[in-house]
Structures are given as structure tokens and as C-alpha cells.
Length: 164
Image (cartoon, rainbow, N blue to C red; front, side):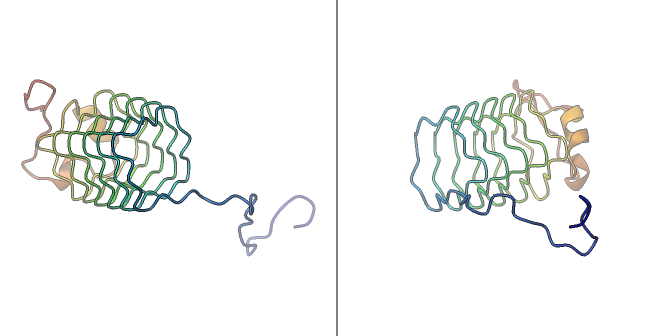
């Protein structure tokens, strides 16, 4: 780097080489009280968070691939750029969570609550939205792969009424 600028061929530099991302792969955290916890960058591959409370937690850039998060609470949590590929999110509560750019590809979202959640840029590819709660058309419009990927699938509100 010369004169404060990097050349186009320069490789990205790890500004924090001593920081190791926390690895909780396969961890049993069912029912844990993790409210307000900082889990940024955490690896929770195949972790069990069944019924855990992660309200107001910071979980940006985390990997929850194949994680079991059924009945977990992510109310007002920051989950920006988090990876939920093939995760079990049955009856999970995402009320008012920031889910910007989250990848839900192939996740199980049966009965999950998205009331007032931010889904800007979220990837909902290959998910079944028929039973999700609190999901509005405006939220779907913000997602990368909204309703158009799921012909005939209409989200429902908290009272079980289909949203048009």
C-alpha cells in the first residue's frame, strides 16, 4: 500500500488476526438464557437452541446451519448476515428482529413469528411460508426471494388470516 491506497490486485487484510470466531458447533444450549449475549461471528453449526431466549442478542455474521432453534426467542435480536441454511426454526419468535440479509434457504419456518421484523435483503429461498405468523407483504417485498418463489403460498397474520 502506497500513499494510503491499495492496489486493485491487493488481497484483503485481516485487521484482527488474533480474533478467533467462537465455535459452538453441536453445543447443547436448549432453554439457555442468552438475552443480550454477543455472539457476533459465532459458529453454531448443528447446535441445539431449543427454547433458548436470545432476545436482544447480537448474532451478526453467525452460522446456524442445521441448528435446532425450535421455540427459541430472537425478539429484537440483531441477526444481520446470519446463515440459517436448513435450520429448524419451528415456532421461533423473530418479533422486531433485524434479519437484514439473513439466509433462511431451506429452513423450517413452521409457525415462526416475524411480527415487525426487518427482512431487508433476506433470502427466503426454498422455505414454506404457509404457516408463518406476522409476515406482511411489505416484508416479503423487501426480501430477495419473496412470495414469487412460492406460487400459491400466501403468508398468514397472527389470526390465521391470509395476507394478500
